[in-house]
Length: 475
Ligand code: FAD
Ligand code: NAD
Image (tube, rainbow, N blue to C red):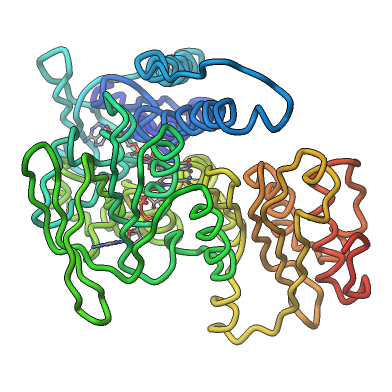
C-alpha cells in the first residue's frame, strides 16, 4: 500500500482482538493488513495464555484422576507416571495447531500478514521493523490498535522465568517443583496453581485481599471455591502482603506480612509464580507522536466507538478499557470493523462471561450479589446445589451450585454464578438469556435434556423466579 493506494484497515497486533478484526474487515471487502511482531499469530491467548494453560489444565486433571480417582471408580491402572517432556509437547502441539490455523484463516480471507513491529510515523502511516530484517511503511485510512497486555511486574521481585516465573514461565517449567508459592489469588494464580498442585507440587497462594478469584467473582462463590481448592490440597494465605523475595541455596525466600496485624513471616519455595495482574502493552508504538492518550493505568483512552484521541485510529482488547479476556477482545474486533464499514457496531458489556478453568470450573455472567447491593438493586436469589442434580450425582462429581440473581419486580435475569464441572459451557445459555433480556421464568420454562447438568441451571431459575413460585423441583 502506498500513500496513493492505502489500506482501508491496518490492524496492529495479531491476538484474538487483532486477528478477528482483520478477518472481519477483509470479509466486509476492506483491503486489510495485520502486523504482528511475535513471529506467530494468536497473541497472548494462543501462544502463552488461554490455550497452553487449558492444555495443561486438561491433562493435569486427567493425570490426577488416573492417579487418585480411577480406583474408586473401579478402573485399575498400574503405575501412573508423569512424563513432563511429553506433557509439555502435547501443550506445544495444541498451540502450534491453533496459531498455524489462524495464519491459514488470514490467508484464506486475503489479509496481508506483515511480520514485524509497528510504530506510528503519522496518524495514517506506520513504520514496520520487519522480523526478517529491514523495514517497510504501511499507509492506512484506518488503524486499529490491538497490542494487548503484559505481565504486571512486582516491584523488587525480578522474574527469571525459571525460579521466579510469570504465567509464561509457569506453562513451561522443566520439573514439578516440590513447593510453589503463587503471589496473587486471581485467575492465573488459581489455574496455574491447580496445574502444578495436581502434578504433585505443594502450592501456597498468597493474596493481598481477603477473598480469592480476582475482580467480579461473587463473594459466596469465592468462599465456596476456596474451600473446594483447600480440599484438593491448595493452601491459602489471604490478607497477606508480600514484601520482598530473596534467592538462596536453590530456593526462594519470601518475606510476607499480615495486612491487618503487620505480623511478619518468611516462607520459602522452589518456585514462585507472580500473578498479580496484567497491564496494557503499548511500548514502541510512538503514541506520543500522534497524540494518543493513555490513562493512569496505561490503558489507551477510547470513546464508546473505540476512537482514540487521534482521528482514524481505534483501539480494542487488553490495550484499552474493560475485562482482559480473549472473547471480549474478539467481540470488539468485530464491532470496531463494522463501525469502520457502516458506522454501527455493538458489544453488550452486560453479557460477557468469565470462566476460571479449574476443577470444578467457576463461571459467571452479570454482577455479583455485592455489586447489586452497592447499586441498591432489589433482587431475588435462586440457588440449586449440584448435589441435587441427577447427572452430577451419577458421575459422583457434585461439588458446587448454581446461583441466579433476578430483579425482584420484573423477574429479569441479572446474573448467573456457577461452580460446577463444565461451568464454562453451562453459563453460555445464561449469557444468551441476559443478552435477550429474558426473565428467570422465560429460562425456567425452556426444556433441558435429562440427565444433564443444564437441569441445575433451569432449577435455579425456577427457584429465583417469583412467577414460577420461587421453588425448584428437586431441592
Ligand atoms: P494479545 O493477545 O495480547 O495480542 C496482542 C499482540 O500484539 C501480541 O501478539 C503482540 O506481540 C502484538 N504486538 C504488540 N505490540 C505490537 C507492535 N507494536 N507491532 C506489532 N505487533 C505488536 N482470556 C480468556 O478469555 N480465557 C482464558 O482462558 C484466558 N487465559 C489466559 C491465561 C493466561 C496465562 C494469560 C496470560 C491470559 C489469559 N487470558 C485468557 C487473557 C487473554 O490472553 C487476553 O485477554 C487476550 O489475549 C487479549 O487479546 P488482545 O488481542 O487484546 O491482545
Ligand atoms: P487477576 O487480576 O485475576 O488477579 C490478580 C490477583 O492478585 C488479585 O486477586 C489481586 O488482589 C492480587 N494481588 C495484586 N497485587 C498483589 C500483591 N502485591 N500481593 C498479593 N496479591 C496481589 O490477574 P491475573 O491472575 O494475573 O490474570 C491477569 C489477567 O489475565 C486477568 O485480567 C484475567 O482476566 C486474564 N486471565 C483470564 C483467564 C480466564 O479467563 N480463565 C485466565 C488467566 C488470565
